[in-house]
Image (cartoon, rainbow, N blue to C red):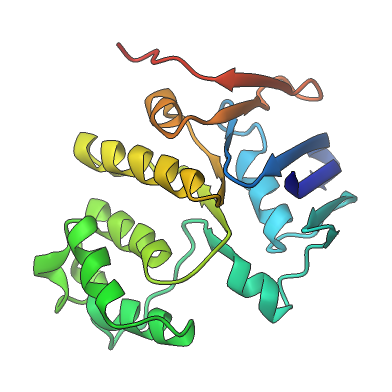
Length: 220
């Protein structure tokens, strides 16, 4: 059963069409990946879906109703990590995760579990501004481990992760889908998509998106 329905999505900037008549559905227990070259409209599509950018046409429905990020239920259901996280300058890594966990009514142990899972256990007392780019990306991903969600939206989550980090991420996304949750991401990493068991939507050919099945490992 589809929980996310995107129909005839369109977005243009300055007369240039970036997303053209894009339609797809996402079901519970599924990982769905937008693939294609830079500039194909993957990030714009994600931003339009979660309400960070206005659509020029089309509709986005979540659980049968128009997706509205202003609704508390939607904010609880949808976790969007789109590489635009702003960190509080006076909060440590652990304090950021604790704030998010408390806001969603989660117990303190989820913070420790998230730090361990992402290899950040020794960095909890550090300020985000002092982290390397790879560590910062792991902190962004840790946010998904300390709050509930039914739909996780990720924009090229493999960026700045090492091989071990990408392996962990692929298995984590697959495990989330096996629990009945849904994942929507944009990615350039076919190995990650393979590990996650993702269904692919190739948006590289403008106006002619094609859906592929679960990908094979093309990285050898």
